[in-house]
Length: 116
Image 1 (cartoon, helix red, strand yellow):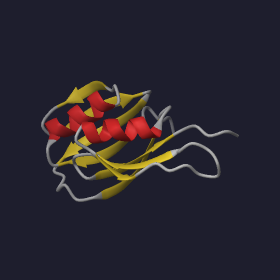
Image 2 (cartoon, rainbow, N blue to C red; image 1 turned 180 degrees about the vertical axis):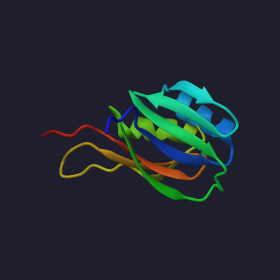
Image 3 (tube, helix red, strand yellow; image 1 turned 45 degrees about the vertical axis):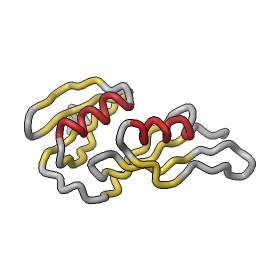
Image 4 (cartoon, rainbow, N blue to C red; image 1 turned 60 degrees about the vertical axis):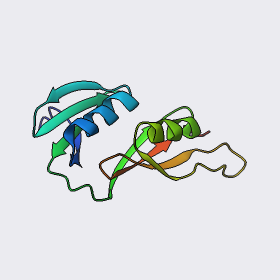
């Protein structure tokens, strides 16, 4: 089978708000946008945003690697999302994980690259 494209779909009760959050907060590029679905490309990955969401908290499995999870968590909150787990140091290393929620209730992680 020849795979043509891979995208991860999340739900949105408010399509415009969701598009703004994912595009603006993470420097995404809007690929498609209509009343039913939008697609935002972030660092080569495509996030599909589907209308009809109910705003319920839902774990997505999405993880975005950033240089600084503390600053990233602040940016998520400033953009209307939530930082639900404050980044904490672990094993003598700087924080590497921030648990977040977008304005539509989609839970995701911000991670920092760790030493090998």
